[in-house]
Amino acid sequence: MPGNGSARLPAMASTRQSFQQQLDAVEEELQNHGRLVLRALDRSVQALLAGDEQLADMVIAEDDDNDASYMNIEEEVERLLALQTPVATDLRLILAILHVNLHLERMGDQCVNIAKLTKLTLGLVIASELLESFRKMGDQAEAMTTEAMAAFAERNVERAERLVIMDSVINAENRELSRRIMALGGDERMREAGLRAILISRCMERIGDNAVDIGERVAYLASGEFREFTDASHPGE
Image (tube, rainbow, N blue to C red; front, side, top):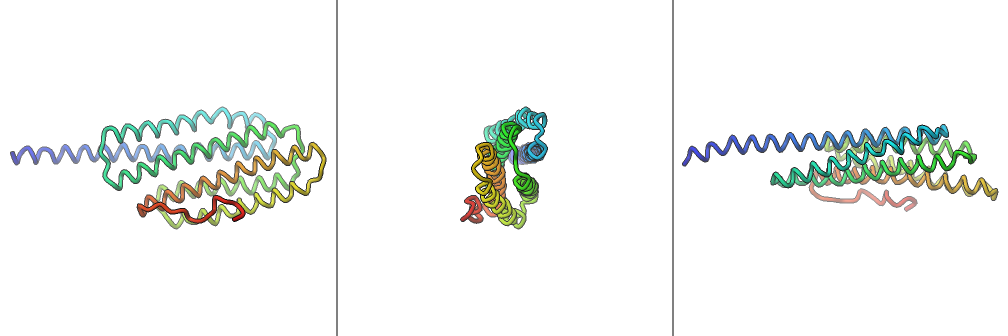
């Protein structure tokens, strides 16, 4: 009988090793999902600034890659839960992966929205100062996405909390852009361009909010307690 118990130990260790390898693979796919979102964000902003319809179409078409990565992670997590019984720390990581995956999918959707709005603004005149605001917001959104995914990979709460300060830059630029649009005047085409600009700005602002949400998941992963950093998701408050 003692021999049977001893035989089970290597089997348990092997099962645990296999589970950890699968979990590591899912987390790597999550980082890949983040890279796909960064690609979409960069291209959507470049398409907007350059008025490049072909690049905007590329962002829209490549959203299939983002959706496929999202679904693959969901399916792999479901498989892990069905075949294994994760301990508390593993379950915390799995839950965090699911939430971050969802935030990334939403960020990818916002990139598509920017691309679609870009196509709608091609015949309109967007003031140069508004384009400069878009450039600043786009750069900051990319930096926040990069920082959020690095914080998750490192389980680094300090880097995660830094996202709140980074997000304040996007929020301030969003408010300033709205002020500039209000000052454009009453010309109908300028009002239409201003409306499109507000919608684009809102998309970028939401990308920043989702990056902060990922940061909050990093803190949850590190501590086991979920907390909102600030009211960073509510611009102007």
